[in-house]
Structure formats: structure tokens, C-alpha cells
Length: 373
Ligand code: KG4
Ligand code: ZN
Image 1 (cartoon, rainbow, N blue to C red):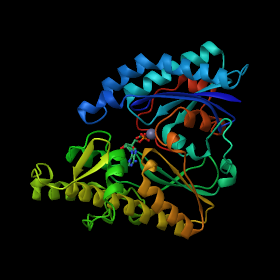
Image 2 (tube, rainbow, N blue to C red):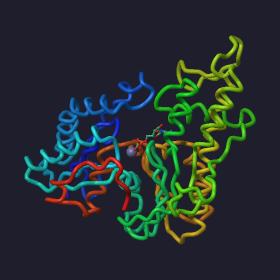
Image 3 (cartoon, rainbow, N blue to C red):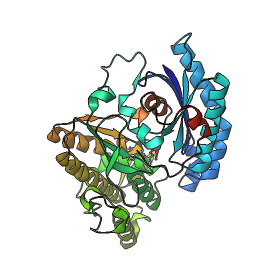
Image 4 (spheres, helix red, strand yellow):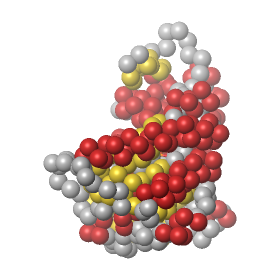
């Protein structure tokens, strides 16, 4: 079965065609990052407008590439993200998907963006000779960690398509924590990839600053019944960084002779900024690793499934590989190109997750605060 997946929940206009939930036949992502960069974050109205401008081209290109990869193939269904995400952005994809499903005369499936991120390790490119990862059914029971710009949540997945929240962030998501720090340090948007690169250069070079490791206070109402030791809170870390920057004004206005470190071609920061960045990243990575270790210690499971933009972080990938190996579970991570937002994860999950289809999907509205489950 060939499913066309459409994704417009944030700042990527994306469409893909996936065969039988796993084999990616085409995948087109138009990123709006340059449009939002001057504002230091995603501006919903700009995102919506850019989705409107690009959606037809992106979908048509995905269909054309699918026809090249699978001559004579037909689209059997259309799948689309209906939440969570930015309302004006989601509306564009949902309306386009309803129209395309109607014009092709095929059913529509409405998909949860966060659940879809957890499907990414199961995607593979058509014709890729690399051995296929476990099938979703064989990876169960699993613990899922969705870690992105909007979410940081640990799920119990006793079987594929069943998600029970075990722990989560009580405030900022990990990606948001990366992005806010980068903004404060004048590194630009999005912050995660830059912080990753800078920290990689700086790691081991100097002593790390002991930033707080995201422990929430016991009994706070935001826990909403979840155990505090399986949750994270990044607001204290953010405040600690702000205080550190205020106490060290030379970080933002360095002396001319401050030693620097080049982290990408033509891009450099002072060594002291690099040390702050590496320390901040390490605090987030260790907070996430610590809760993951605990979750795995309490659950008998076969695999740890990682999904979301922050799962691209090289330090997080290394540390979680070690955590999973020690717990005796297999770590399933997506290829880098499927970590960020894309249509393949929507089309892929739609093959397995059949809860909102047909007339229900045609009538559905966007759900910006949609929860998993
Ligand atoms: O999944 P995603 O593309 O969009 C959401 O659903 O939120 O995730 C975007 C987030 C951004 O916050 C971005 O800074 C972060 O993922 N990110 C990273 C890295 N690459 C992207 N964070 C840390 N290290 C990275 N290498
Ligand atoms: Zn996402």
C-alpha cells in the first residue's frame, strides 16, 4: 500500500510517499528556517503563509518522484498531521490533504505528529542495501523517547500504537532549551545544531561548568501524577545560564584577544562561549540520560525508540547508546534525514495507526495541543 504523507505542523513543508509503512519511495522537505532566522524563532503567520505558497509544489514533487521510483504505482491513501503544532500551519496541510484525498478518491488518515516521530527508526529508503531495522511489531515492548523542539516525553509502548506517558518535561522541551540558550548567546536559530557542533569541538578541551541537571521539585502540580524522578524541568537550567551570562559580560562582548574556536567554515566563537555551550548541552544530555536509565530500569522492554529533532544531537546519541547497551535493550534511532519533521514519518505511521480514518478524518479539525495516545 502506497501512502502519501503531508506534514506542516511547524516550519517544514513536507510530503512523502511510503510503501507498506516503511519503504520511503519519495521524500520532499522544504525548510522555512531562513525565513524565521531574523526573528530568532518560528513566527506562526510567516510559517502559515510559506506553507500556502509551497504546499502544492512540495506535494507534486513528492508524487512525481514516487512515480519515478515506482512506475505505474498508485497512491492508495493520504495521511496528514492534524496536531500537535501551530494552528495556522497545521490548517494548511490538513486542508490540502482533504482536497487531495477527495480528488484522488482515496481515504484520508489523520496522524499525531509526536507518535509519527517515534516511527522514524523504522523507515528505510527504497533500494537501500543496508539491513532493515526491526519491524515495529518485533521491537515491542518498547520505551519511546520523543525529543524535539516542542516535546520531551518518555512512553511505555507495550505494543505498536499503544502509548502511555511515563515521564516528560514540566516546562521547556529539550529542543526549546537548546534554541533559547543559542538565542541568549547570539548564536542564531535553530540553536540545537549549532550547539551540537560547538560542543563537539569544545568537549574535553576544558572543565565543564556544573549547570543544574533538570531535576523537578517533588510535589509540584505540573507533575500531574507523574513520578518526579522520571520527569525533567529545564527552567532552572535556563535561569542558571542567564545568571552565568550576566556574571560574565565578557561572554557577549569578548576582548579582541580572546582565544576563539572555529566550529564550522567561517564560523567561530570564543573558547569561553564554547565551554558554556558544551556545559549546557551536557546538562541536558545527562538529564535525559538519567531519566531514560531510570525508565529502562523499571520496565522490561526490548527496545528504546528515539524520535524527534533533538535525536540528531551527536552527544545524546552516544550517551543513549551506552545507556541502552547497559540496560540490554536495542536502541532504535532514525537516519539523520528522518529525525527532523518530514512527511515520510506521517505516511509510515498511517499504515499502522488506523484510529482516525475515512469520514472521521475528513471531518477532523486541527488539534494544536493534541496529546499522544
Ligand atoms: O522534531 P523537530 O524538527 O520539530 C519539532 O517537532 O519540534 O525538532 C526541532 C528541534 C529544534 O529545537 C532544534 O534546535 C533541535 O530539534 N535540533 C537539535 C539538533 N538538531 C535539531 N538539538 C540538538 N542537537 C541537534 N543536533
Ligand atoms: Zn517534530
